[in-house]
Length: 225
Ligand SMILES: [Fe+2]
Ligand SMILES: [Fe+2]
Image (tube, rainbow, N blue to C red; front, side, top):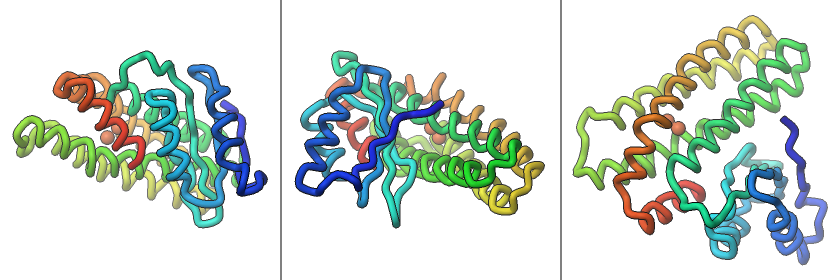
């Protein structure tokens, strides 16, 4: 899947922010754009949340030091926000990156494999962090604490997922297609099953726990994490 890119570094600083806002506001729901920025786009993300509340899903693909690459997908702002909606969007884009990594490695396109694997690692490490540090604590505190309940189980699986990412990166760096295939198989088993459990059970239950204004605030914290 190819997503069009906008290189913000090529736009003069004085007009950069309005030009990027123009490009993003021209996207129809479901359309995506990847922005390349010379620094963390925190100001842009805050502006999007205030000017177009509920209008975009977004997340990182690359976090410096030379470039910051963020993926944006427009959504219908009239539809209510949910944890399920945002994190399923994030799961699917990560699954695409894993598929692209394997396809490039098998075809011997190692520069592409390296690019996709490092973007997959950036997206998935950040995703696991935001669940561990923002989402699960919010849910646990709303439910009065869980002990060894569902979030503890998900945290333990994140440890396996992170180990799988390290293994994939080592295999790509070694340009070893067989090892990439093995790492991909493990990640498919561990990460895809993990995503399915979150999507079918945990996220809907989190969405049911919070009234809509609190859910909106929680999704905003996830977007900015
Ligand atoms: Fe997770
Ligand atoms: Fe997740």
